[in-house]
Amino acid sequence: MESKLICFNCSKEIPVNGIVGRRDECPQCRADVHVCKNCEFYDPKVYNECRETNADVVREKDRANFCDFFTPRKGGSGGIDKAAALRAAAEALFKGNKT
Image 1 (cartoon, one colour):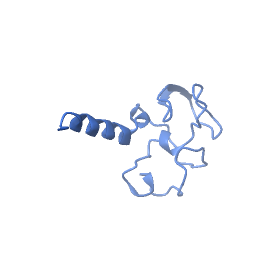
Image 2 (spheres, rainbow, N blue to C red):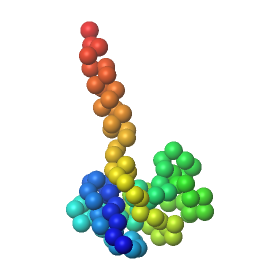
Image 3 (cartoon, rainbow, N blue to C red):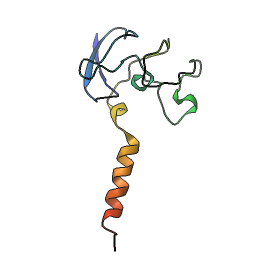
């Protein structure tokens, strides 16, 4: 069964057939696909940024790794840079208050 994964780097859809290999790359931006930021368990708000407590520590969340718990993330929320979105919202909020 084919599913779709949203690339963490370019936010484009990547077709996934079965297992994602460690050397697989996004066809649009050539970023690694088997990375923490494309994983269902990735969560920047928890310890080690991973909800899988048995997973080994991975320092570079945007580089290919050997994690056996990797599960392709469903949906497209991972491609959004939340820090940039918050910064833009704050700038928009205070932009009109200059005196």
